[in-house]
Length: 129
Image (cartoon, rainbow, N blue to C red):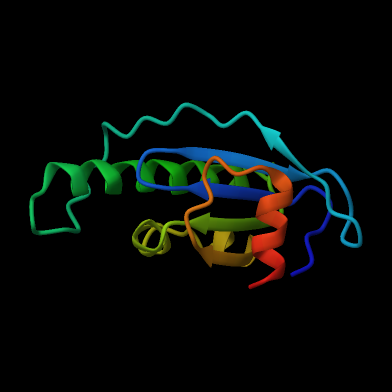
């Protein structure tokens, strides 16, 4: 997968939201950590799940807050290219909330939990996809 300069890689799991940015180019990507925003998951009920589990609702609220931040950044033209890497269940929840513009900016997804991993490890996972 080619990562244009400036591509944002969002790493999301049930509790964490981390961001990397490609400061290199497509031929030689250089993923650097970017400060992720503090998400407010309290306004999201996660009501798409009927099991009522507090843990599931909390995880879904976190995922919704993360994708809403991504949607906002794409709509504000601050992010042009996005790769989403998330735990499989979280990725499913994120997809339900992609804005059309985020779908167009999305250059790839990976259903894998890579939160806490550094740029070279993330690049290796994307290359093995």
